[in-house]
Amino acid sequence: MIVVIFRSRLRSASPSDYDPTAVRMLELARQMPGFVSFKTFAAEDGERVSIIEFESLEHAEAWRDHPEHLAAQARGRSHYYGEYRVQVCDPIRDRAFRHAP
Image (spheres, one colour):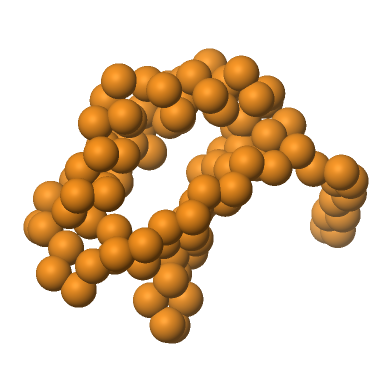
């Protein structure tokens, strides 16, 4: 399992096409082989955090290098984001608990 953490802040005057682009990128990610999950959260201070999981590093890299995603990344740097950080992680430990009803 590979976990990609994408932390970002939008520019104050981010173009109106940001939301449709973000929706399209989520649709595209879900279609990628090896895709596991995608969740996005927003903090009160404006930071946004997306957590994307793939089955392997190769699957995560295929997503990173998808032509439509590359175009969105370039548009993000030139138009949408004031700053961002991408961390690609290989979990050291993975534990889970689920209360059975």
